[in-house]
Image (cartoon, rainbow, N blue to C red):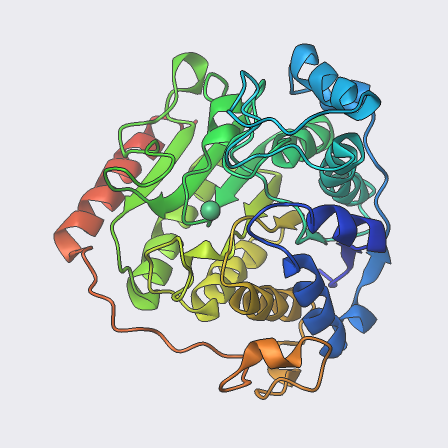
Length: 369
Ligand SMILES: [Zn+2]
């Protein structure tokens, strides 16, 4: 299969992404680093087609979407306490929020539509991946669930879609959207400890009714290393792939599982993400790659640049020292593309990891046909 990539990027999308609290300038850093490494030359770049009201209510409730419309149409005063739609606290009202939601969702839906043309093997939208948004409320910096809307687009064309979530947080919004159906299998690797947001995604959360065994959760403890994570990912994702036999895959590459993230507690470097997506690429199916969390902004740019290079088969051509670029000063003190692992204690012992593998292995036998 030749590498042909649809990459979503436009200035308006970067502007909209920049409105999200906690990741100011992140989209600019990512775009600048990918550009600096000349990776745009190896991809087909597309602008966003914003989604419509009717597109948004394919997943979200009309009352929730009407709320955004009305916020845009009238002058609003800042909401100080979180309201019934989850707006306030970690999802504050954003300026021109209607434009924001139609662009954020539109970017992933545009990417999904490009995959359905069959002209591209891969589509990338690093400004997407907002996996916590629920049908009728915003949650955890996520206002609309671009992932579910993109999966719906893909599902209409490809049928079976496998969703893989590498963000340090449980992909709760996507899992809940498909919890009762066997039409999409969701697989989330995340930190799972008392009090760690969103506190869902235990090994026993496997979906319900027709969706039983089609939600797969890999709950990990603090400090997991590249070596354990990569080995676990290869084993589990291969079992899931062989049992479910998807026609298309969506990978949320939230970069808050990296060492040095101010929120996440894992000990991964970009190598872990690279090896995971190489496994996915080896299946030779159409893949939609999305962003997600990641709050050490220069490390997110490093990671997604490495992933873009792997997808574009340019991995070995990137200079290890970051070339001069617009945000060069952000990459100090070492100014290198690589990140070194830290010496955080790993609380995931072999017995614990083997128990996860064994449980998922048994559950996957239940869906084999
Ligand atoms: Zn996250």
